[in-house]
Image 1 (cartoon, protein in one colour):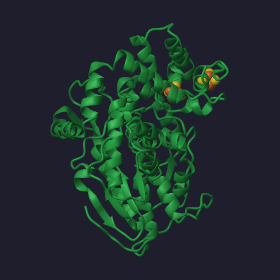
Image 2 (cartoon, protein in one colour):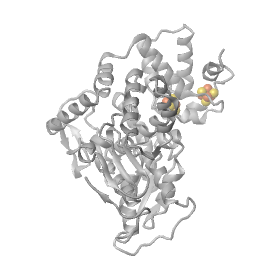
Image 3 (spheres, helix red, strand yellow):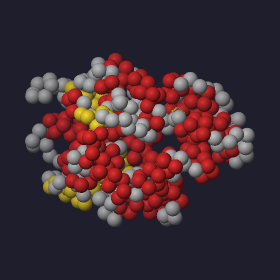
Image 4 (cartoon, rainbow, N blue to C red):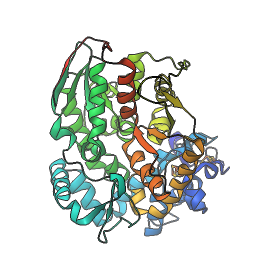
Length: 446
Ligand code: SF4
Ligand code: SF4
């Protein structure tokens, strides 16, 4: 048995201890053996050894997973549960194919940036017919029956102006490093304000900011859906889109995109025939916005500045939710907390279980909203216990799901903010008009 295979399936690796069950959000809602990693690994091994067919039931168990990585982090035997489950999906896609509707979406729409763009522009035109606004402009709910969208789910509407329509090419000039923004689909189409806040933050640090208009979906939906060829094509397009600007850093505000770029692009780009040197050069530049700002601002992780109640802005009490793909996957846990704690008019209160998944899991929340909602309710309970006025996080998908959960639980009054929004507003207040950027003043254009 190869070392890799032993690591994945060997008895010496998975000791069947069941620790993964104790941390699995899906198992907490659906306590069946196949819900947690131990059961999924056993099924994948049975398929690989020829004892089990890759049936629809097997597919459903494999896909009933948030890919949150809690099992891998907790496993005492260091079994690589995530890559094993992704490999099993990939094998199944190769052997029995992806469901036709899903294949169409992943390969023809997600894989073709022009078609995706056209589909979302068309959707924007008709969204008022299909969806209604919910109070306080906190989102939209369906008016008419739509597949995969339940009537009680609050979603963000498609933005009036997409991020890359408003910003593209060089959008700020400064004396500091050359930084490209990888927006990701959610920031581009749903939350362009987050991208705008990122530009504001980066600009005030005096860096030159670029938004390559040729950037496409990071490919995460295709990869986890088993459409590996599409994921490889998208990875190559993004490499080409960013490398022509001669950047020092590629910064993203989306935990899932960042996790995918850092964790999966090496294999995808090498498989696609991109030279190792070129691949490594691109990968070495990828940073989450929290990492970039933490480095450039040289924030002291321990310092808890004296809070000031004076001035126009009252103290805001915030708690922080760690997105799985930022905290667990990228190891970026201390930086956001340190950045929050460095803001004089913001009080940080910890949240219980702040690393537990919010229940979103990409398309999981569409296909299994019943489970996703229950996992989300556990997160909402922890947010309410913290007593915070606002919950801050660093992933647009978590923002969407937590906001939906708060509204569903009658607490739409609690703000859900991206870190870029919090930092942009409260750093500005801290610096005041005279705040000097690190690399001198610079210009911005929209
Ligand atoms: S925690 Fe690890 S060793 Fe224990 S059952 Fe789960 S995968 Fe196997
Ligand atoms: S990745 Fe998360 S949801 Fe999936 S099996 Fe592991 S703990 Fe459960």
